[in-house]
Structures are given as C-alpha cells and as structure tokens.
Image 1 (tube, rainbow, N blue to C red):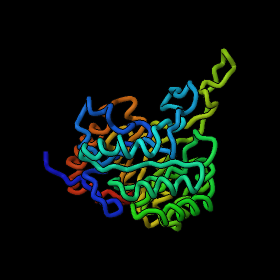
Image 2: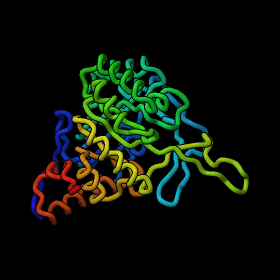
Image 3: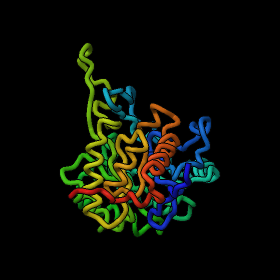
Length: 305
C-alpha cells in the first residue's frame, strides 16, 4: 500500500490525521487503551468539563434507537480542577492532540474555565454551547446567535488558545450560528451536537429517559449533520470540524468534501471500541484506491455543478 499524507492543519495545529474522538463518548481515553494505541488518533476531545463536578442526570440515560442512540447523560464529569490535575497529565502522555470541551451555565463560568486552561497544554478549547441535556446555559447559548456571539467574545478575551465553538443543530439557521461564532472570535466551529428527541414506554406510558428528553446521535442524523456542515462551511472562513453519525472512512470523506477540515467520531465508539482506528485505516485505503496523496485535497472538493 502506498503511503499517503493524512495530516491536516487545524487553526495552525497539525493533526496527524483528521480523526478526533468526540467529546462525550470517549471519556478521557483511558478505557480505549485496552484496545489500541490511542496515539494513532488525530486528537481527543475530552469529555465535557464544567466548573464543578457533576453527577449528571438520573437514569435511564441511554436508549437505543433503530439507527442511533438517545442519551441524557447530563455532562457527568469530575470538574475542571480534577481534569487539570488528574486527567490532562495522563492524556498528554498518550501522544495525541488534546482538546478540552467546556460547558457552563453562565458566561462567567465559561470564562473561568478558559482562564484556567490558558496556561495548560491543551491544544484547543472547545466551547460547548450546544448540550441538550442540561437545563440552563448550554441550551440557551446555542439557540441564539447573539448569545453565541457574546459567549465567544467573552471566552476570546480570556485565552490565547484556539477556540472551537461547538454548535447545536436544534436551530433554524445553522449558518447564522456559525457566523456569530466567527464574528465573536472563534478559530473554528464544530457541529453537530445531538438532535433533541425522546422515547416513550407504551406499557408504563412514561418517558424512557430519566430526563424525559435526550440527544439523538448515530447514523440516522448523518444526512442532517452533513447538510449543516456544508451550510456552515459555505458561510464562514474559519475551519469546520464535522460530526454526526460517522461510522466509516467513506463517511469521513463525505464530511471533508462538504468542507470540513477534520471530523469527530462519537456514537461509533460505543458500538465498536476499535471504530476510530478502523475509520483511519478505511480513509487511508480510500485515498490509495483513488490515487489521492494528501487528505487535505478532499477538503471542500465537493462538485455541485
């Protein structure tokens, strides 16, 4: 097999390949070291952290759907200080790029975490304005362009790190949200987070999820994610990091052609712990079959005429 160049440049940071383990389904990566060398990844977006430790939502938290899952985990995490003291040092030893995903209920909470991360060795800060499983903050910020603009501007003033703003699909115009993030000083946007949904037990006549509603992800959302990534990439000049139901190397190619510089793999990790490295191998195989030397040749190369 010929050697191809899988590396991509994202906001001036070189990733060894465009595959990032998505925040929320990969934890901090510890569980996956049993299966493969996680240094093969382009990066890891660590499980979303909040100012203080969160226990998350009551069970039931995950429901399987015909082509994906509904989750209402609710940002269970150890808090920013424990992340910096315990999880980040371990992650930095693994030899891949580390992204810290942060979520707050107020602009000041986002800023406090950004200040703490500014002197750390994380490569990026992913500002999560889009989690559907908390009852304040994230959902509000991600639903309104003025709020996205305000929180991005505030975080921008608190850190020199590249900022990636993670957008919600639960909006009427994704391009408007991406533009708001760019105008606020974001270095990139990532999308999509999960689509709000619910499940009902017809025997008990009660919602299945303890939180009543949850976020849907997996292959069923891929066409929506692909469309939104394409629209966002058309609207902004900063990089787009795509996610939403990516299960194979050819799924990655779709997102790159739509204009994404890199992608995040989420739900696939729950179905197959080897998903990320399998997808990297499949992407490399696709490039060899098509005679593509550099993966960046695919970015935005969609033909629409």
